[in-house]
Image (cartoon, rainbow, N blue to C red; front, side, top):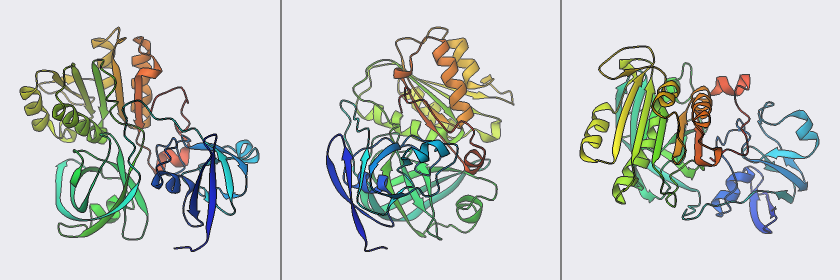
Length: 350
């Protein structure tokens, strides 16, 4: 850990924070409760892009698709991978929704208490922490691998001293094939930091809710559902969970039980390749069939960039405006390398 520290000034609010030379500007800000826009935290999506007004930053491993060469020349940086090389002044967008509590990022130690195969290529990882982590339902943590790298995973439960993560296996993935699906075992010590992300339930919004999840995009939706139930939900909530085959469907029994015990909730699983006793087809297509007019709802989308983009198109065609749609794109190394769908519209809620 570097002892060298610089001052980062965030305009237009004039906040000043200390940032180590080996620390990203975003991490330093979030730990001090300065909530700058962010999503992937790995230099891929472009959400945290900001203008450097004074000083020097190491731009780090920013995707050339999310931070163009012309933008670099004009002084832009992705704060989730940029580190200070002098005192720095940046122009950031600090925006917090009504009714949303800000939880500064902290480090947490824990021990694995469950590691279960819940579907083909998905494991449920539960970690008992030494101290409880507060978060807004829908946010994520960074899980640290044995070699010091970090990977983001959405929190699938309620805030507390035990967290639940849904981990999809990625071929040759450093955190999955190289660790979670290989050597990690119940009883192992792990560490996480968080909470991160601006994808979470907006408690001040009282419209009917559409939850659209692809694959392990179900994890933050499970947190949102549990939060709604714990606070006494009085609006209709519909969850679509899209996976390719029956073998990919997970948390099916839990969601059926949840629907049976909560009249305000409807569960609509969808298989894109297999047929079963539910519906067959991609979620964006099924949503378009069910909601030719979606105005008056608020929607939360989570899954692969392709899933989110197609779901966005379906909802906007159904007259749901971007201000009523919150999204979380699960980027992987292939998305980063190819630049697929990495740059997102600033008009879309996150």
